[in-house]
Image (cartoon, rainbow, N blue to C red):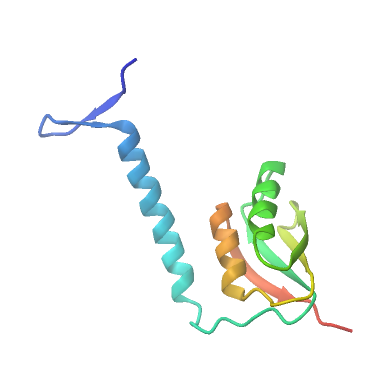
Length: 124
């Protein structure tokens, strides 16, 4: 079995998968850096028992599964409901230390999506 290679102008060869891996890493870190620059270091913790995340790019059940998986890794994330049509992701939280807005954004980024805004549900 041979590995398909890209030929550089100098004549040397680079395996295609290395080029693809490098491009993927650059895109991933470039996107993450944009989000981190907009948030203060003291990202606020969620105050209520649920939070609604407005996410761009959701289009299929695999998207919903990826989002749910990443959010459930957070402490207190008890139930995650993804509405593909509206891009709304509702996260119900159990009692305990609350995740921060940065934690939520990082989970959405890790799933490969863009978080537009966070709405905290107000306690009655």
